[in-house]
Structure formats: C-alpha cells, structure tokens
Image (cartoon, rainbow, N blue to C red; front, side, top):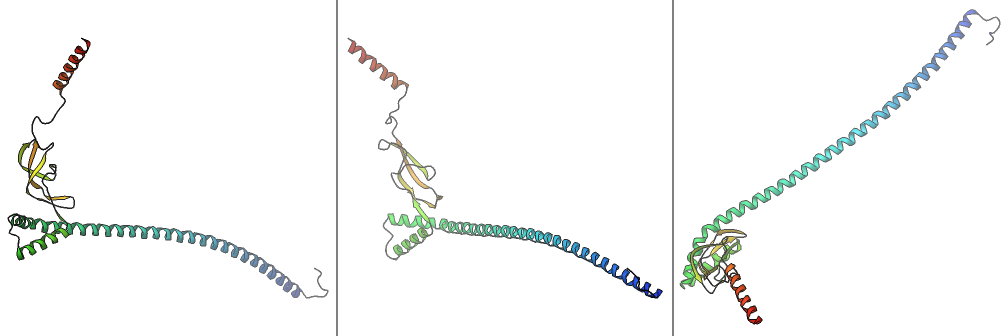
Length: 219
C-alpha cells in the first residue's frame, strides 16, 4: 500500500494498529467457528449416547414389569389353588364325620323305620351331602376291586367266573376320585375246578386222543 505523502509518523502507527486488530479479529472469528463446530459435534454424539441409554433403560423397565406381572399371576393361581384345597379338606372332614349318620339312616331304611318326619330329614341330609360331592358306591354283583372294596367274608360259588361282590355289608363313600371309606363286602370266588385251564396234562391227553384217532383211521 502506498502511504500518502506528507503523513505524520503517528498516523502510520495508528494504521498498522488498525490492520493488526482486524487480523486478530478475523483469526478469533475462525477459532470461534471451529470451537462451535466441535461443540456441535460433541453435542450430537452426546445426544445419541443419551438416546441409546434411554432405550436400554426402557427395555429393562419393561422386562421388570413383565416379570412382576408373571409373578403376580402365578401368585394368584397359587392362592386360588390353596383356597380350593383348604375348602376340599374342610368339606371332606365334615362329610366324613357324617358317614356314621348315613349308615344309621341306611340301616333304619332296611328295617322300614325311615318314615314321617324322620324320612324328610334323612332325605334332606342325603341330598345335601350329595351336592357337596359325597358319592356312595358298592353294589351286589359288581367285580371285586381291592382299591374300592374291603372283603370281610369269602366263599366259593359256581355262579361266578371272577371274584364278585355278592353282598354289600357296608357301602363305601368317595369324593371325586378320592376314597373316603371302602365298601365292606362279601366276596365269592369261582368254584375250584370249574375253570378250564390248559396245562401239560391236558395237552398230553389231547395228544393221546389224536394219536388214537390217527391209528384207527390207518387201520
């Protein structure tokens, strides 16, 4: 740059100061722009990290809630199952204590003593225990089942082909599939010798008869 003629020395220094200040301002602006860009990049990276952290926390909280919900459902089922079990035990105990009364009613009915008001009470009691699930079992003529019957008497009979309950001495009771009391019965077994069994002697006899038949045909 051409300096104006006749200028003062102080004017030159002032101009140089202005130019230097301008250069410093330009440099400071460039530095600030670089710092702002760096800050913006750092802020973007930090935001992405925060978003990933938030998603991970949401997934963990969701898994915790699902686990708590499953545990609560299992707890409700267990409480309901325990409640039903306690109820069944209580009902079973009450019904079991009423069985001797039902036996007395059955014996009175066999002797024709269940009449009048006693008949109504007996029938009402039998209806109530039946609604609570108590079932009577044991009939004459049914096959003997050691899981349901208790044999108090034994005999032999040619009228049966298997162990058979020929007399019900005391009926049995059950609740559902659980036996409260087995039926007390008299059992008849097949008469010895009435059942045909194919043993070695029988096979030998049949073989001898076959040989005789074959020999007669040859002659």
